[in-house]
Amino acid sequence: MKSSRFPLTLALLLLALLPVSCRPEMDFVENSFRSGQAEMTGGAQTVSMLFGSAAGSASIDLTANRSWEATFVNDRARNWCTLSATSGGRGTVTLTVGVTMNGDYDERSASILFTCDDVTRTIVVTQKQRDALLVTSNRVYVPQAGGTFLVEIQSNVDFSSEISFLAGGPSGWIHELGTKGLSQHILTFQVDENPTLVSREGLLTVRSPLGEETVHFYQDGEIPTLVVSTHEQLVSPEGGPFDVQVRSNMDVELLLPDSCSWLQEVKSKTLSTNTYTFSADRNDGRQERKCRLVFRNAEWAMADTVFVRQNSQPILLSEDRVYLPKEASGFTVLVNGQDPALFKLEISDPWMELTGSDVDDTGTHFHFQATENESGEEREGQVRVFYKNFQQPDVVTVIQSGVLPSFSFTTARTEVQVPLIAAPDSLTFVFWGDGDYERYTEGLMHTYKTPGVHTVTVEGRGLSDVRFPLPENGVHYDFSKLKKEGRK
Image (cartoon, rainbow, N blue to C red):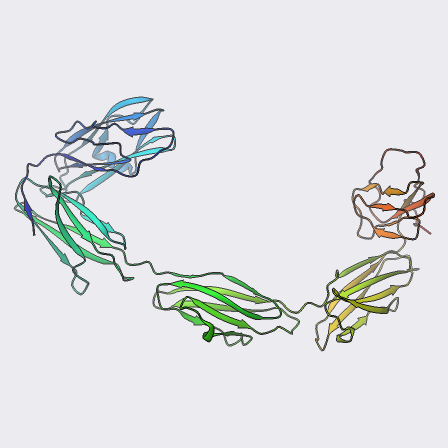
């Protein structure tokens, strides 16, 4: 318990925050206060002005290197708080803050923002209630880590202070350290760290013949935390172990659904309480499978989820669509595995047949032959590939063109590039005239092994917009079949 006596004066409490180094610049000028005995001892981002219940005013100088403006955070404060200027230009200006008499029994406050482009300075105006001790504020908010905190008390009579704690709660975590420096009206308190998740409250009661004021100390508890290292875990078809890191300061419960029998927690391999180790079985099925791991604390109604997804074993390694010209053509299907006996093939149409297979490091290559399409119409078939006894196959769709529009040109060059087709169809082919053909792609080129004159034929839909290169010697274009039945 401590008592003090000093004259009642109008004071300005300076909260000196971290310096702001940005442009444009604006600041309250050092030693610029002209209100009683108050003075400012250095530039500040935020200044607090404390008034008694009587009407009064205080002045401060503001300097800025560009135009500035002042606004109230809450317009209702204009009913009792005034500002001598709300905007200004470059230079220094004297600002006067005035308050009317506070006849209420409640403390009131207002914040005034001074803005110069993206630089902001703030004056916090606090006016005490009628017939009250002058305490800077009735609330002190303390972070979980604790620290040193100041309470300013102004009075012209003797006063005493007493610390108390809420019934049933912890005690002894606020310690009065006495006065600070020569300012006998500044009380200093040390607040311990709060090691629990629960917030707590302490009370400082200041008493005098005028009455008493209570300052509430509110301290946060440690913030409940439950965070997983990943929210999506992809597991290979071969399965195997994986870890999930869980950061939490609470008890954590794992929910693993019974439907996820292919996934197990490996408790013997857990290295710490924050690491959960799981093992996934090999997926020999033909379907992707999923599982949801939920880590929760029911008391705090907090949870975080990890979605585990495991792909099925791949069969088909080549593309699932094959495009063929109407001529008799061969094609190959590549599957995952070096033993052809592990696979069963089903061919949908008789115009396709299996001609053989070979094996290399990339897998098994099944070779097929398609007969010439004499119908004139596009046709489509399928090759279904089954692995072992799986009921779900991978499917290769084979599309063979019918008779298509075409154009051709002759060239004696050893290297040739096809013209640019603006909107080629998927069934657009280039026949180079030496027995080779390719599906059309932009910029497609071909080199002849044997010199001579070759006829290049391009057939397909979408040939109405073709960008031909500049004419050159030895190149002759034939467009007679571009809108007819096609190449014979």
